[in-house]
Image 1 (spheres, rainbow, N blue to C red):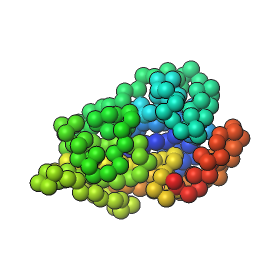
Image 2: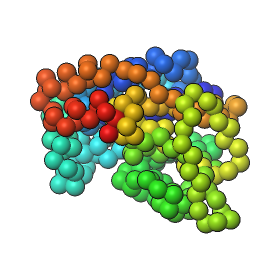
Image 3: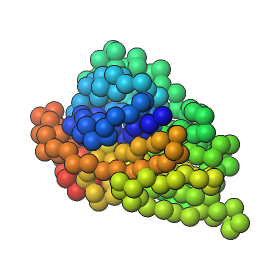
Image 4: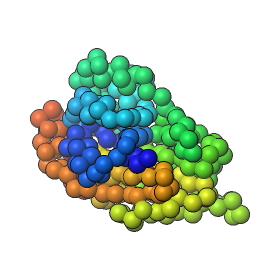
Length: 242
């Protein structure tokens, strides 16, 4: 099976469409959460997602849009975007997001938005947090999003540590027998100083993982955000990937 793995679409339809076009043929889609929030097209992104054979998780911005999180825990820009998203979502979108789980096991893979320890909220930003999280899933591989940064952590049991591998885009990597935590990056709001949409392809027959990036019309998303009065900083950051 060939899976398109995405995370943190954040209501950026132009980026999501570009990823689907760039990915080519795939059998199913795994989405690691945060379909909405920040961007201008929450309903359209959910509708496009649902066209595919799909496993989708709920992220913290999805929960915020549903009123399941206290918005006081968000910064001012994220809070404003979440409030706007709550007002814009259709009942169909809301019902779909409401039904999403925060954690799934799919064969050899554990899927979480933030981490297997705290699926909705925890950020895996460094090897120490990654190492601790290896204790919280049983199979070899865990796929996470939330940080908006593509990376691969490999458990180093002998040294009670993790090895950190950064992506070589467009080069399939054999997953092997090591235990791994892998982040595909963000479709709709990258934060690694690369504004291109990030995603990955997983081949479970060959057992390979391929990080990918693709250009998308950033200005199209920015213009739609301006039209809706979304915060200026959220508009500007898309151009720089931070």
